[in-house]
Length: 485
Image: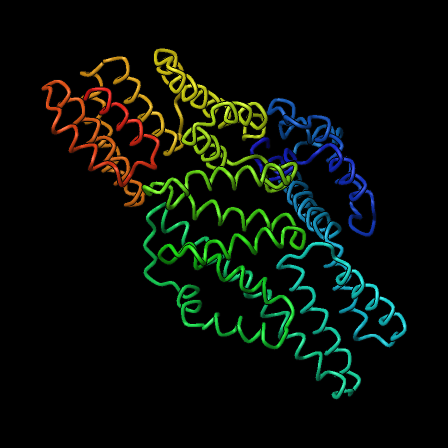
């Protein structure tokens, strides 16, 4: 029984949820089968591990029905019924936490009942609740749209058509705002997947729809007519444009300006997503010879940390990639002290399964930057990550450490293996592949030219690398070329 869906679900319950679920089962409104209460009380004693030996079917059945012979079908029915109640309990739990959804459904009920004074009181409360929101999100516009739809339904049911005219217009405006915010998030995510994981969408209806709407004309119209939230519409439009079209400095700085300006208007989830878009843009261009993007990316991370929305929520973990990119951007910018402080402050916020590897590779990078190459290799040898990007980080750091320690034969062998690893991996974007292959080939050339004392070729190699000096590895290569020359 320990592998059943019921036990799997009960394992996820918190201590408080266990107590509330027992209260839920004890309510005859939800459950009239007292045996299910006893069944749960037997199981909850083994929470949270539910040791398989302690919840054997026959043992549990004997505790439930000490005078009866074991009947597997009876127990199966109890498991099925308790699982059903678990699902209902979780549905109610999430519903109870969403006061807007509760209020919305109450108004829907009241619309068709002959209790107008109650309806108007609840409507006024809900409208006040929405209008007093200190922070907006796409869900805010969704509920404002639903509010207008409720008013329309109420008046139409009472044959009061003239009263719905303005409400139809408001309903349309709020619906478009909700749709626009949600659509631009989808487009942004599609673009990230395409860039990072080399996804080739054969059909892309959201993208096609977005490309065929003249959003600039719509935004201009909203500003001319003084329609509310025109800046929000412009900001989310620029979120897509900045990450899907060629670099346009004007668009980027306008987008960033609007994000900073509206920090106090939007809720944490929206702000987190917008800053992720700023991160994505800078990650995409940081390899440019212009070091602006490298420093800009670190500034974005610092702004998030200083304003308290670096994580999705206070209880959320820091994703592996966000932690890695933040730490790497500080190292690339030469801010090693900040990087170490960041490591101390946020390492415990990384998901436990990733934490040990991230900490070790971060310390390995710090040791490399401070010249302790042997220690860096020692730490690297202890890391065995599943994550593709960490594997690549480790290989890059290993190559540079080999060179610094003059383990040139090992470096040449590792370069060949690394190139094969990168070339054969189909999930990496072309941009990412090119960047890593360029580094591997350039390091190989550096070793060969150095051994043959071909300083002119080394000078030519350095010139070839200048367009990519924003990359930390390439910058390191150029320093090594200078040392040889």
